Length: 168
Image (cartoon, rainbow, N blue to C red; front, side):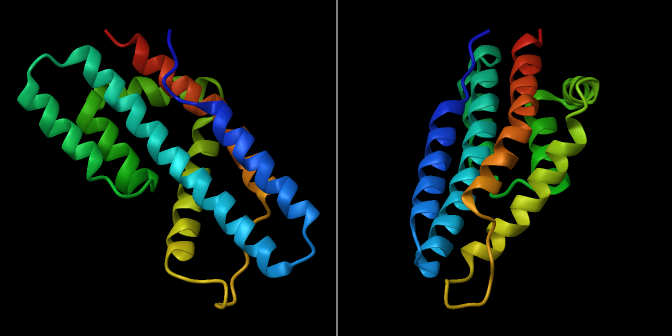
């Protein structure tokens, strides 16, 4: 199957941010780099989910008005909390039965709980980061930690992609 998610660019971005972080002695700059790494990772999650669902729609939907309505539903989803955003969106686009297949396949590779935990954790962190600046006392994970979280969910995202791509 043809993967639509770009795993390389985000990994390279996080590596670059981590290198800058490690080469800096300016704590404010390190905080900004940490915040940026987290926001980049969160953006990658949202874009990846959107791409997977849009690719599915492109293959499965012939009616342009249904396609437009469903694409608008994807576009209007503003978060990635698992139970509030991700699960309802996937159920809406691919259907409940197909979503159960995706979850079953994630369980089979022991990645479902890691994915859910990471999504919920970073959804919360992103919400805080988006509504604060560095003058507010708040700490962010170093870019290397964000990159570790990225690597922990790669297999889950790839499995979601593969399962959805295999749906009849």
